[in-house]
Amino acid sequence: MTTRERVLKILKDTSPLAISGEQIATELGMSRAAVWKAINTLRHGGFQITSKPSQGYTLIQKSCRLSAEDISLSLSPPWRERISLNVLETVDSTNQEAKRLLADGAGDLTVILSSWQTHGKGRLGRTFHSPSGSGLYMSLIVRRELDMTDAILVTSAVAVAAQETFSTFSERKIGIKWVNDLYIEGKKVAGILTEGTSSFESGKMESLIIGIGVNLYPPQGGFPEEIRDTATTLFEEPTPQVNTLAASLIERIAAIVEHLHDRSVMQRYRNHSIVLGRIVTVSQGNTTYSAMVDSINDDGSLSVTDNQREKRVLNSGEISLRVAE
Image 1 (tube, rainbow, N blue to C red):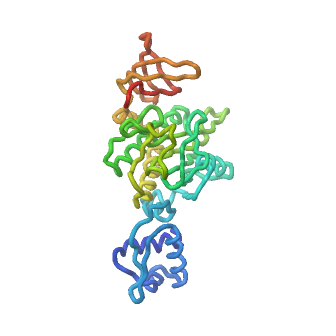
Image 2: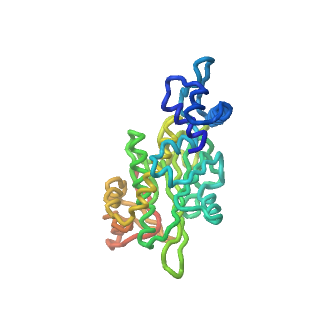
Image 3: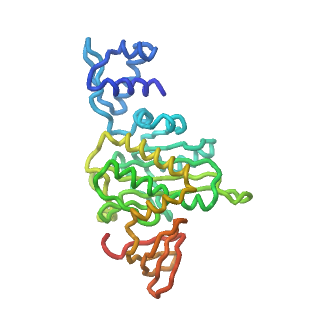
């Protein structure tokens, strides 16, 4: 752990009581000046830490801002050792930053997080609205050899990890819309974008970048008009749980990627699906047609019956629900 993480841990363990700078310095084997510097850095990061003569420092409130120190402390020890965190104030796109880090040799389970993307990426070349201070945008690098069948499952598995994470922090019912969106009461709350590189010689994936964007709180001024009726948020206002949520999301995604061979994740995907048994509009290239969703298969594909009563299996494309969700 860094000096800031060690100081923050002591403040958390002591809160709501005060602890002197001298006691912190003694416990951590560092100078009072180093403690003072770490506390000032934590304050700058959004942590409310008071100080009183003869009493010491008190952590009053966890930060509502993304904090590498708070996320790291919220990770369980095995994951804390394996995950490399990169928390940025702003970035063009966390997936783009992940690609740059990959090119520079970033290792497996490198994570990029930000609360503001200037050019957030969605599927099919679309943008993902990512205003400052209202969302969580994250990319995780998976740098290991994967079979193509496992790689295809990643988006579905990550959707399950995200749904289960968000459900532990919110009482609202969260569903999955094939293949990569999470919905609350008929409106999109999060999207997933998975990108990968494959080896022609081995026929396997060499690396994956798993990106997820979450609308945490209503943005200042509201959503843009074009998505105002189709987007929603996980919370109504900023919450100090943001770093705990980020850590939980990282752990669940990392754990589920480690066990992609376990197809039981697809039953959990089906349990949370909002498209099974529904009439949808299917878009594949320039072709659009109506269909009934019959089943979601263990490989992540969608089985449908089109309006000509023909059975089809969708491995790609996009669907939209024909009536209000």
